Length: 358
Image (cartoon, rainbow, N blue to C red; front, side):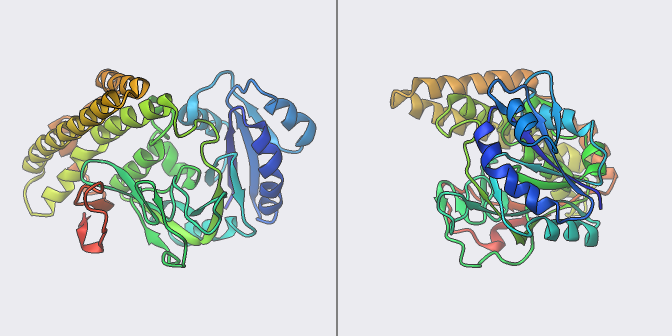
């Protein structure tokens, strides 16, 4: 299958110098695969580095910084390939990382996206925060991972060495079917960056496809290459985008749950929309509690970030109606794997029976 491995770069010339040579060596071994760098209007020396040090690599120069979402959407418009790989510039690949992913997509047409195991570049035997061995979502929409609960990272002892369907896979290194990506409208441009891959994976599942971690493939991730963990802007994006993601997908997911009980699509849609609105209201209350903690601990920039996130989300959200959910349910498509029935902050002893089977 024709495969485009695409780095979306913004001001990371150092990572390009460090990690691009290894990526090129690994990808050239795979028939039909090509590395492409899409530059999001960098203001450092990234373009010069590409021209002078990697002239053999196709470089797409975007006219402005469209963010992670818009940048990839714009780049993929210019690329003809069966498979897209979204890969961060701060990823160090291992030998043979790409072949298992391509093979999995060839052999599993029901899979819409797949990803490798993600290890920490700094602590190489540990999983990495941004995706570990595949992601889940808790009762109120908080993401966590197999191998990473909140900020606690597990050591990889081979406990996740079998392929597994998950709720979401990391956008730091994610393979997707180009046809499905385009059918779903790509990444949601409103997000700009952060949680966009979770939203995409959720929409893929609602469209009837699976998201899988293929642990035969493994890469290392530095993390924080574009926005550091302490950035108030990153905090803003995470709070805002989480709300938009829940509004995008939660009602349809609840609708599937109600349909499994044998009720009509119309009744399921009404109940689902009502339940989604209640759940999102509780999530907003939890966010306000977080904002209060930031204020009380004198982290005023973080407090402002949360409040601005909620204000801006309110103006950006397009809430699905009962009719929208009913029409979706009548298609008979979709199923969701990896939704945790509990609040991960209080219930960290995660068991398989505690997940919804939708």
